[in-house]
Image 1 (cartoon, one colour):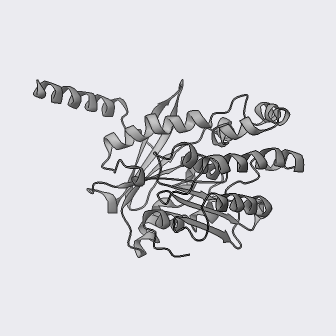
Image 2 (cartoon, one colour):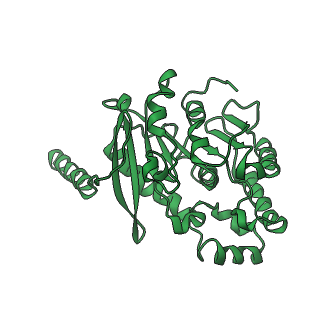
Length: 313
């Protein structure tokens, strides 16, 4: 009977892997291998890129870095603005100068038409004035907020797929999430809503005004920024298990962030993420703008912080 069950689960595992065979792609990566999959996502599918650095091959218990906007990570010849995070180049060059645990990177492609709807912290909308919420539903969110569904898909579909097919650790502390701009918002939201899923969140150029540039106005911003900070005050607690990194630049779009970023820091301080907490790191990057080139220059800093906290500032 035990042998029969063993064969059954082996067969199920083979079917799972066979069902989602790697796709052909034209991305060029440095010192590693990249596998692309299309996975079910509600009534559609979602592309996912998995980067296995040479340094991680053959090792077990690997950490996993989950990243939003996955189509922007590896190859600038394939991106809309011809810029990239240079994840693979940094792994093989910048990160090689530091001792750190090996990890793999899972790049989750965004849904361009619904990016704002997927990345806006969904439960914050419940605290917004109804008139502003309805305006954003029609003009920004395509009639439906999708962040909870997005995070549930990561938890229930993507993470099990990764942990079934790759030699990665399966504990909360083995998983990290990182994003920029709106991707920073959804990363922080994930830390609140899924504390058992991710052990660390890195939020680069976190989009503290909450809405897109064309909608910037005092009343509209306050209708979102106030509820967002109220949500964090109620749902986020520094427990000395979860790492949190937030930053902003000082140029281009990031130049508008200061008052909203300062307010965020006040809220984070109130829940225990402050300079006395070795699991928290915040930075103002002088001269840095709001694009993949800027994030490529510094993504290794929060990564190292989440992998091995040495109390440095």
